[in-house]
Image (tube, rainbow, N blue to C red):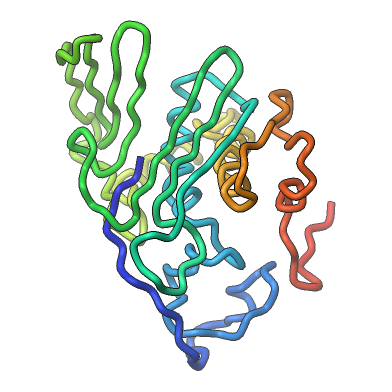
Length: 253
């Protein structure tokens, strides 16, 4: 879940700042004239460059949820929502629910409200596991366990000296924990081991939310091959599997 209170966003014609290499900044995206209000953050809400809140913050929650659930590729993905709060230039949803079904009767649900800051279970963002014997809330590098009647039975505090997620930090919500990620990466290089979240694991979490966006854009559920995450039997959705590249920026393998 991610709940914030983002503002109305309009883009205006402007001139590229002297300090910015706009061609390099756009990277593989098809070229679009520069507009004020896009850089450095609001590009998230435009399909030419971004993927909305689903892969801005959502991927981080889904990555932890997948890890906790022990799942890889889904069998079905659906998404609903829209740009409801403001009538502005946003293209991606400000309100979105993505439902991801995995083999073994496991369902992962991600919810976003970009323009309503009311907290859920006292948290602005985080992950809740609902199980057969109780539930577990995690966020801020801590967790709480409840029984089926909702009684708190365990409360584990952060062990990182107060470092936690700051959902309103637009530069990096996890700024306080970035040093831990870097330390793990360097330690993995030194010891020739996989980092805590290597590219294969990260791919599966990113793909889950990309499929959620594709479902939202085509307006229907997607049937997914649980062996590889590919979309089954939907030509319109399959067209969104890849992106259109600026000439000369196409990936080559």
